[in-house]
Image 1 (cartoon, one colour):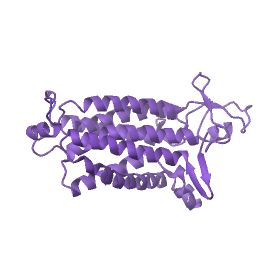
Image 2 (image 1 turned 45 degrees about the vertical axis):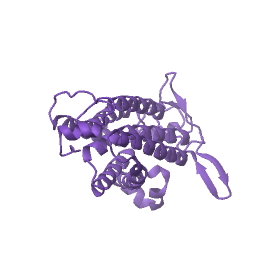
Image 3 (image 1 turned 60 degrees about the vertical axis):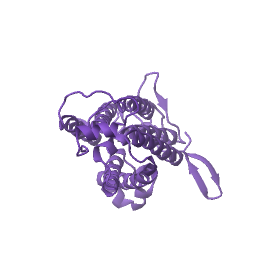
Length: 291
């Protein structure tokens, strides 16, 4: 694993930090392209995403605090580490910050959130690459050819001792110090995120009603995260063997259904060449849709 790329004196460049930077740059660029496609000002993408990134980090920390308040109370410094980031908290915080920026600037709500959908998928892929490079957020032990060992240089080595703490069924004869092959769920999620991006990018050329493309992102991500949690190494299973992330995934699917059914289900023709999706959406729904 490569948690640290290089150091200059006391200055350290981490692989996770680099991936966050790339996530921001790529997401802002894709958001600007999507805003232009909808007839909106692409220049606002960088400023809006800067605020969204701040909201995402705050949300990720607060979500982590809510899940691990006893551990944080015992060691408050851990909330400031990289490990104190939870994607679902980041999604909630980022969405709230994005909503605030959209409202503050008087932008159409549905079209703005639709513009952000492909960017979210790409940002998620870079984020999971960061998790992989530091050696964190992997899966349960596996004997399959896909299994990978996360060594002592990883943020959380895949030792039998650690895996036992998250409920993995490991033979008693295996010593706690033994390194085991586990599902590289970060790579699974990167692949899923790239597929999501391809689907969302293609769907962004369709004349969907405002809010539906963002709803499609919520559905795709909710399904992906619900399934991947079955092989994640986690200790937050609370009812029927489901994790808190799976419960959140079900809520996302409910939100996706709401966004797709709110304005009806009739199909709409694709945008004409040279036209903008924003103009067609406005003609069909002058209120600009909703999220």
